[in-house]
Structures are given as structure tokens and as C-alpha cells.
Image (cartoon, rainbow, N blue to C red; front, side, top):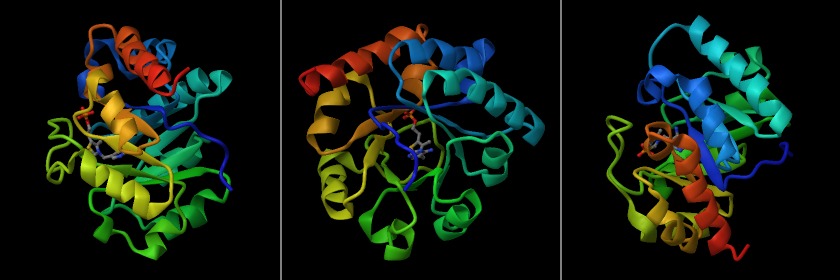
Length: 213
Ligand code: TPS
């Protein structure tokens, strides 16, 4: 069993979209708005810089009880003692990742289509990232958008926690949760926002309202 996690408002970092404010300051602002989990994603730059930023994020998030997940890089996750790893279908196989990170860390996998998933892939993971729900310019070469209906179908079939991703904006909170997703994963709508705290709060208040809190 992995440590507990809450997919409700899942923030994914992007160095380019964070701009001169930087990833750590952008995340610091966003968590004030109610982010429940952070994934640090690495697209370019040196491994040394990636580890340094990941380590600063651990220092920021751990005292606040917000898990940090590292995209793709198991070595970086272990180096900074992150809470988990998120992989895509062309990254290291999840069985191997689980072997390396141990039973306690959180392991997530991205998928667009149900038929891409084998029992071997579903067994070791704690949650699934499903999308893109809408077209996104944040991830070049992302698969075609799947829409809410397909998102719901994946959720009903996998029997695992599911976080939706891809082009999601605050007005999509209700249809995403109504389709059965356990949360929304967001890059540009928070990271590139002028006020990341306000953007995150817009999502988190709508999530709370949908759940009747
Ligand atoms: C939990 N992924 C699919 S679409 C996208 C990314 C990064 C871009 C969305 O950006 N699920 C999880 N983590 C991931 N890294 C992926 C899937 C892969 P925007 O919100 O700006 O449209």
C-alpha cells in the first residue's frame, strides 16, 4: 500500500510556462490556492538543475503534507526522497519502477485509451492519468483528445483512482468530476496564470462546491 494521496487538484509543473517567476515560486503561490498534489516534470535542462528544483519542492511541500511526484525520472525521485513517480507508456515499465521505488511510494501512469492498458500495467500502479480530455499545446505529440464520455468509461473500467488531464480550465471541474474522475491535473491554467494562487483557488472552490462542501 502506498502512502495516502489526494488527486483532487493535481498540479503539474512546467519550467517554460512558469517563466521568470520560476517553478518553485509558482508552486509556492499555487499551493495557497488549494493544490493537493504536485508533479515535477522535466523537459529540458540539466539533471543537476532538475534535482535542485525537485529538492526545493520537497522542502516546500513536505511540511505542508502535499506529496511531490517526479515525472519519469526514478533516479531523481530517489535522490530527493520524493513521494512518488509518474510515468508514461514509453517510459520505464511500471513493474520495474515499482521494484525500484518500493511499496510505499506513489506510482502513476498516463494513458489515453483503455486498450493500451494490460493487467501487468494496472497491477503495480496507484492511479491513472487519463487524457488529454481536450486538445493541449502543453504536451507536443499528445494523443487525440478523448472527451468526458471516454474519461468516464476508463474510470468505470479500471477500478483505480483516475486524474483527468489536458486543456482543463475551472469551468471543466463539474463535468470532469461528474464523469467520475477523482481529480483534475492542470499545467497551463495554473502555472501560466498571472495569479497562480487565484487560479488554483478557482479550481479548488469549484471542486469543494461540486462535492457539497
Ligand atoms: C497525471 N500529459 C498528458 S496531457 C499533458 C500532460 C503533461 C499536458 C496538459 O497540459 N497525466 C498525468 N501526468 C502527466 N504528465 C500526463 C498525464 C501527461 P495543460 O493542462 O496545459 O493542457
